[in-house]
Image (cartoon, rainbow, N blue to C red; front, side, top):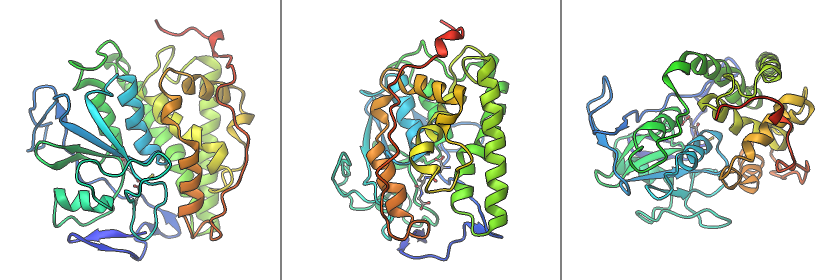
Length: 329
Ligand SMILES: N[C@@H](CCC(=O)N[C@@H](CS)C(=O)NCC(=O)O)C(=O)O
């Protein structure tokens, strides 16, 4: 995997993300916010005003973090306000590319070949990883944010003039519960599967594996009590969990060795996963072809033959049993 150093692309870089055999995710560097009135977020200097047609999302269908932003764009009905392009599923020595095939769209804004060109367009001296998602400002021609957890908060509230203002996935009265689940699930589940898959020592793998299945057990128990993580309201915490659950059986069980149990083996988690998948507009954001091709094909160190398994057979459109719980109107 490559990265940018002082604006120059390096195809191979000693993997600084492994410490002590453990996978350590780097921090996103573009951290500005789009706000309804354009004022900078607390502690930030640059302000970006919400306007329809001004912002563009660069995503990968494969990536669980980018997937969150696609989901919020749909849930908040922002398809007309925010444009999207999709990178190719294969990530090799050039990083994410704009090869156009199988639903990957190329770069309609600049005709770039590589995502790293978008980063250097924003900052010619950028040093760091070149990741999706990217929220791009067409007006100032720069990156607003490359941090999915913050992009979904912007989509949730900054664009309400053009989107669906009636849906709030981070309501003030539930924030402490949502944040608590987010922290728990980010560490052990969303990032936990990567810690299993990219571990370079048995000990690091087993540590991440134990934490992952302990957290999934907790979530399973919660979902035996309530329809969603935070009671009867579908919130941001559920959607952040969903992108990992959808990839779990087709990819993480095999590719990342997260194989104590499949999601299909958990009564509540598996039904909950199907319920979320069946929310209108969500199925179209899940591209299983990109997901499987990306992971099995790109991570040479994990899967040197790059052979993509044919199974498992999965049908997230099957009926679910979650109607046995109350859901908020
Ligand atoms: N913290 C970031 C993480 C994004 C991320 O790690 N994306 C991966 C794809 S799943 C990526 O683009 N990796 C490329 C690289 O690290 O070189 C977020 O949530 O937005």
